[in-house]
Length: 255
Image 1 (cartoon, rainbow, N blue to C red):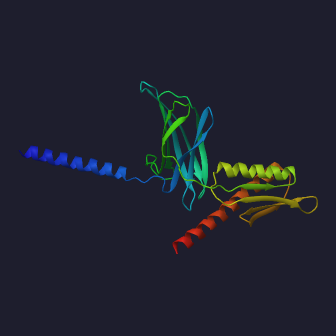
Image 2 (image 1 turned 90 degrees about the vertical axis):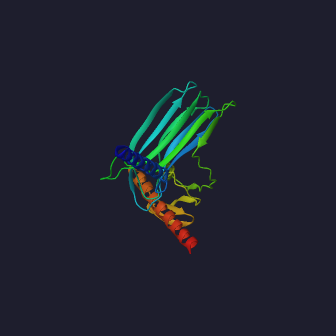
């Protein structure tokens, strides 16, 4: 009788432990500090899915990601492929991590899963994901894809990067700047103006403005490395100014 009693107690404790662990797992909040998102770009025959990550905090983060693709045929046989890598995000930076392109005519279904993990020194590598995005994809009869899951549905008016340059060096600077601007997936409704005017001693002056506010300027030198360096500095100044605008807006909204 006593043995049976202890067995019941042990069974009850195990049940409570399992329920508690399951409850904690269900209460995990993803995308609070670092947001995982799969962006979708469609064409008539193919659809590209880009795995992106956005740092929602004030400090830079060491991170790692796993971008998984599960392909199930009509007999429900599943084949998995994945891309894994480490990366770093500056504060409030957004970055494209990887991408996959799928033909709009697929049999069965495809599931995409993006997980983002912390990768700071001293942390256990088995620590759970802090960012997550999952999509399930099937073909429709009309040749388009039916996509379900964590789709970003917000409508956002994106600001423009406007170019008013005079020389090849100015156009090259704009190209380097815009390439980094696109890769970091900067999201703002403010316009950025890159303007080039005559300067001193046969040189020209490039200014970079955000919403009419000057954030960076420099005299042009045609060397590629110099223009790339200036593009990086200018973009950092733009990001910093956009963060200041957001902080002011948040403060005004709070009070």
